[in-house]
Image (spheres, rainbow, N blue to C red):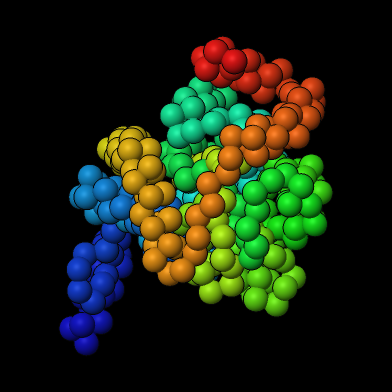
Length: 330
């Protein structure tokens, strides 16, 4: 009877009741479609830990990884907007079907290296913030992927040898590259990639080294051609209504933790790429560095993708493109 009285009193006073530690005043869920050991998921875990520490456990964020919540990449802007989760990591170009300005991140051979990718994303941030706000959310941080290369069963050394490839791509721009080189793009969920390679549905993949490690490509593929075809980025967004309900201390903690994570992730990306490529080599994959002529031919054959995007772009997207090109002096 005494236990019941204590429970009733706690509930009446609005005190959280737990079997061990004190319960957080606010509990959120953060969604990640990436596996638990992927660098994007690990970053989200670290972000959540920072927020918990900086708020004295007043805000606790539980990360659900591996797509366990059932949400698909292209729908994640809607998922956050509708409050189905308070926070979600999402591939920026993966949600470009909802706002075309996000496609600029993976226009093929626009950003030629990590430095240019960082410059592109810094330039794009005000534009992306505005686009996210239209979807009722706020960007907490943007985190890079290593550049996307071509992973294949047979060695590829020219554009001509790319003809006929059946290639899994992660966004529209990648699909356009495959089509431009005479291949067939496949828009498969990450969870379907390994089985599709094993059964011959596809014979190649455009992606970065962390994804290759996550999927154990060495079991079903042999060659890696590092090309920086695109350099993708993720953004971690928070539902704006949920954010605005927080006290100032918690809001500041989210913003500060986001700044810290963004800075850390951009510093780590080159070393991460090298580490993951080494793991692939250790497991039997062979890296085939494309020749200068091969890379030039790829840039020429994909030029129409960039010009078509620019022709149909919004005034904001065109302004962003021109601002970036001016900064890289091209």
